[in-house]
Length: 67
Image (cartoon, rainbow, N blue to C red; front, top):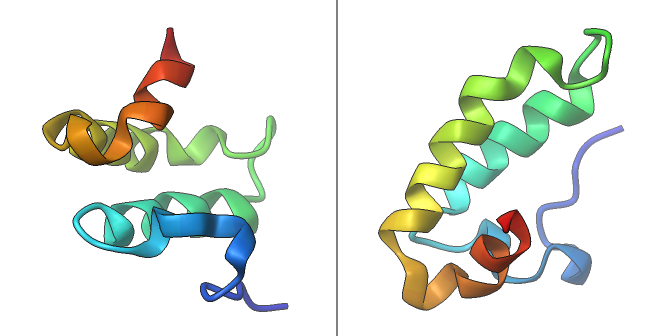
């Protein structure tokens, strides 16, 4: 199936400023065939985390989960 980017379950994660990097990382994970799942998506998730860190006022909750 396809990812429903309008799903309320994704909250504001698909919105700017980091929405595109989230979509790239999330899509990579969803469609990953690597073992363990998502192993081939590390760089995409690093890029997403870097974007979150550039905008701590918006992504404070996601950054807090890292600790």
